[in-house]
Image 1 (tube, one colour):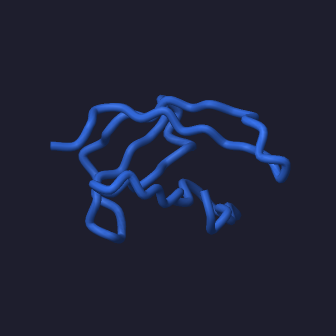
Image 2 (cartoon, rainbow, N blue to C red):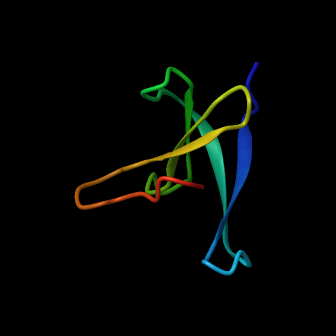
Amino acid sequence: MSPVRYELVFSDDTGSPQDVMIVARTSSKGPGGHPVYADPTGIIRAEISDKDEVRILASGGHQDPAPHV
């Protein structure tokens, strides 16, 4: 069973933590077949595998998520 929530930490090029977001599991599955988690606004969406691998998903037009998180 997958966790209900995760804490995602986003950092800049220096590696220092910049933003922390809490995401909760949704009923959706991502392109890899793993659960999708989202923040309360739905702007931050991430597919998180059972090995805790994170793939940030675009939640709207003109978004270009970083390939490495």
